[in-house]
Length: 335
Image (cartoon, rainbow, N blue to C red):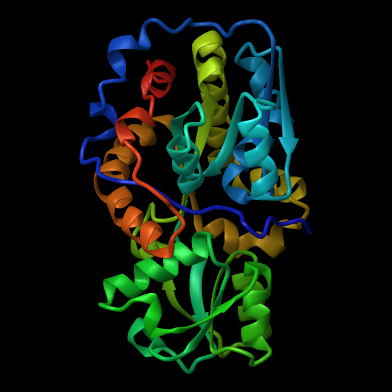
């Protein structure tokens, strides 16, 4: 099974404006062509369930149904590789963690966020060997987690919500893929990780308990669809067509969830039954849902996560959110 050890993370702040209120939306949506421009599209992706609807779109020819000539989905096994490809202009678009997008934009990379793809609820979580039952109980305890990742965000946020800081625990840095195993082996009492490692840990030891999950603040752990600015200006019709293909794939997934999960599981190198809990812990967003969810995302979640990301040292500086999100394409795709 191939899983990226640095799958996602999060973000920046300051914006109380709603997604639709950033001044980038419906006023210009009519300027986008109704049909996609000619030419191939190169999209970057990693083996994470949250990006799964693209695999359904490819398998069921939903890209062609939207008039796209060719969409090449290029797989990357690590965040570093897809990030480098986006930075170098080898991809026109990609699927990345929200914090990664914000870090890119803070660094001056010409990217825009055009859609919210998924949020994790119970697919990212803190688990214990049973000796710790709440966040307060973490004080002075060893906690295994991967620094600079979604696990880092979740841990810092959970601590801050309970009047604590990272100084209140004993950090045990290690890859997310190893954190659960370390806890099962009795090396640490607590681990912060994500699926499928959560399920594997709980299957190996029935005493393992979930202490805290991303569902405490839906949106805390999330992924976005980003495009390079030259693609945005040169092929706006293709972007709309891609979003429509995502929407069609999600509609198909909701009608035939078992079939959709089989396609996605195959694409990430697993069996559907191995990922059942992981799927249940992820929420996908339609384009219509983007319009409502993004208001909460930008107005409430991002400022909270920004604080956690800055505290963890993941986000090095603030980003002006009003320059980071372009709503025109969701608007055009839902007209």
